[in-house]
Image 1: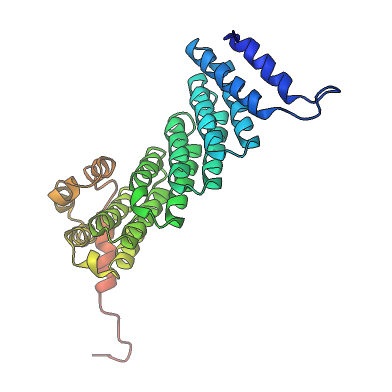
Image 2: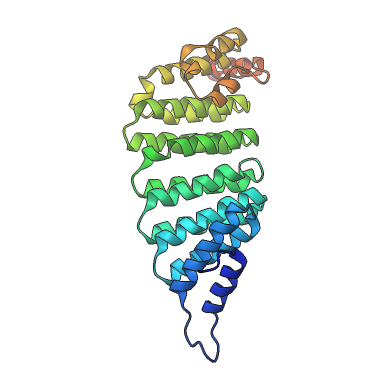
Length: 296
């Protein structure tokens, strides 16, 4: 009867993959089966480190056998174990490799999913890396014209940017979400994303950028004629007029209450800075210029 001791299985598998005077070619088929058995044995025994190594080797074996799908699956198993061990660098590397292997199979959806799993695992420990993985996962789906499948990923990346207080990056990602929604005719999501971006700029007390963002988004008819577009217009008008009570009232409105929770929280804290200066600037801009030729 074959041994079920994972250590012995690993040793036997390693021996089958090493060339020697008596073995001129590696027996990857037999070795891979042994690595897979060892990986399961280690995982059952909760020996995460050795299970991770065994799944890595099983993944390599499936690659050698020209089976990238199985190789990707094993790499994901190794990544999950790396997460249990708190080895964040390996978590990122393994999920990226799994994604690459899925792409070799011509399967963009699982390739994107693998990156998203990695991002979720890294959100608290390495948020910047998580954002990069979310971004790459979105790009895969965008290139496959599957933008609608990426909505949760745009949302997750935006939340991390806001948590890190990278408000300009958050707004930029929201605008990217809006563009993706436009491509798949998801009008409601598109308008929500644009209004959310404007709210983020206002929260960062960047009125000029919020105004520019509104002007750009208003070039799109569905936003201009939508309740979200009207809400954005009212918000900016309230800022221009220095009307703090109106800003607060709009922050409690039903339109904003139906946005994502992280955006609602920001909107409910508006205004975050001094708005009376904006009223003064607006008044100065509307003053008639002096006509030097009119001496009356």
